[in-house]
Amino acid sequence: MAQYRFSFPVTLAPEPAGGFVVTFPDLPEAITQGEDREDALLQATDCLEEAIAGRLQHGDDIPTPSRGKLVVTVPPTMAAKAALHLALREAGLSKSDLARRLRCDEKEARRLLDPTQPSKIERLSEALHALGKELIVSVRDAA
Image (tube, rainbow, N blue to C red; front, side, top):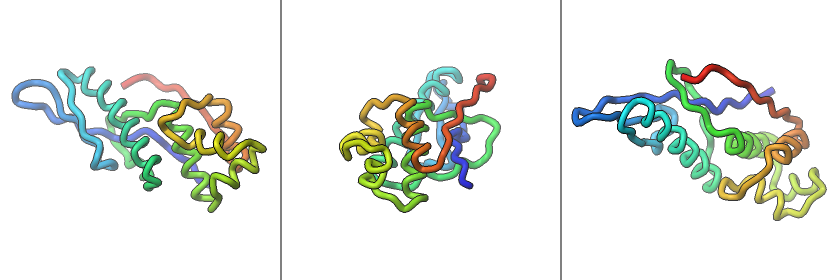
């Protein structure tokens, strides 16, 4: 049984002029910066969301995150969309198949997978359940 994680390690590199450059070892396209550590991590969250959205839009793989001391987590709705994308691929199903399982229009199924379209977390959870997955939310202390 596959379990998807969406907390990715980051590297903060101090800049000589001040601030930090943030990179993601698992996502080479994701690079950002911040004026201080707090701002760098805030920018990293936005950068990570954009990197995952880009991969979803292009149908690219989403890597399994490696381990690291400092991690940034994909926002919940984007994580659910990414999980749905992975679950659909894992099952070898199309968006049309998903629509049939959800008893909805194919447009709705496409919107659930589109990172630019708003989706309710409840509906994403239903879609994941239709693919034999369970969406679990956890809370931990902030970095």
